[in-house]
Amino acid sequence: MITDAKNGKINMIITKSVSRFARNTVDSITTIRKLKEIGVGVIFEKENINTLDSTGELLLTIMSSLAQEESRSISENVTWGIRKRMSDGKYSLGYSRFLGFEKGKDGKPIINKEEAEIVKRIYREYLEGKSTHQIVSELEADKIPTPAKKVDKDGNLMCNWRPSTIISILANEKYKGDALLQKTYVTDFLSHKAKKNNGELSQYYIKDSHEAIIPPEEWEMVQVETARRNKPSYKHSGATVFSSKVVCGDCGAYYGLKVWHSTDKYRKTIYQCNHKFKRTEKCSTPNLSEERIKQAFIDSLSQLDRAQVLEDCNLAIETLRNDDTSEVRVRRLNAEIEVVVELVKKNPNMEQVEIDAYVTKYEDLVKKLNAEEHRLESKCAAIKRVEVFAANLKNLEPIIAEFSPRLWNLLLEKAIVGRDDTIKFVYYSGIENTVKI
Image (cartoon, rainbow, N blue to C red; front, side, top):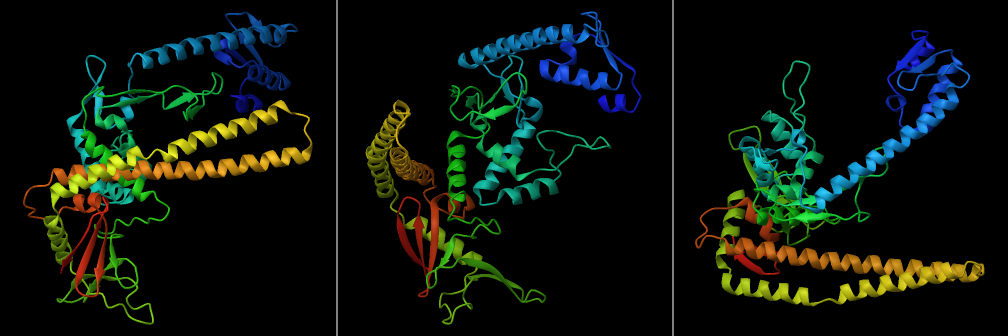
């Protein structure tokens, strides 16, 4: 509008009211002055103000301030209403952009069966070892519409998925039937900018608030798998289900897929140490076919004494939970940091030498706190990994007839190939066993 006014396309702007023009006094006055400089006036019908009159700007300043205050009051009332509904356990979803659910007659989410199958597919493929980029490529190849349901210029649903969308779906607790409310909040009524809630405001968690698409135990498995992939030391490759899992016992490098005779009838795929020919001394570990790895894993699972392993898992979980060393240290370090901060506040006129000493003390305490919080997070992650392992082991069929990519990813930390034609399977529970291949 201002550009058109500068180009001489507008001589006068007629607005219904001040509140329709701008709810921010500063923006309103600034814009009006820009327009006056080029000889364009604004008439506000409701308030009967013409900005080209001598008293126009004064009246406009007063009315804009009133409009801004009214906007603030309305915003506060709306915000209070939303938060009151949250505290009462009431909520709504952005159904137009939420895959798998639609609004029911009672206002609560109900499952859209067609879209729910897409959600189940995403969870299943992720647990089978596929990366988010792979899942995106396959969804696009199958022309699956995105949650936003946008259409192109021809009116066709767009299928341009993003890895961030997949990550969001995998992390959303609503798919397991729960609801975490107030994940974000609006910082102020003028900018309407949303900010992630990192504890600034209360959050409300409602269990079993609606029917689940994904079983809770499967949702938890996905969170454990995501935490594993997000470790700085871990590089996930979704090339095959065996990527980043099979390890050479000689050099510690991963096994990778290799193709022999790729252009003739003798074509064959095998798994081989990626560094087999990169060292002075060639690795002596054997090449493996996919079938041999699968059968070895089945044999390994079959050899586990499930009752004993489950007992060991329960003992490990209990031991980890009873160890509150990190919790105690975190509380103590937080208390020490508060003492340092209070001492500085109470002594604003202290010498620079004293200030430097307190700063050094503060930084040392924060460093120790971060390390202790990391240990605490690692302990919680270990508990969750063992719980997931135990749950999957408990649900195993008495006789394992075929290879399961899901179990491979959820139970197994790594498979170490030995030069004596053996594979040592190391499970997330800490259990290990070795089978002949």
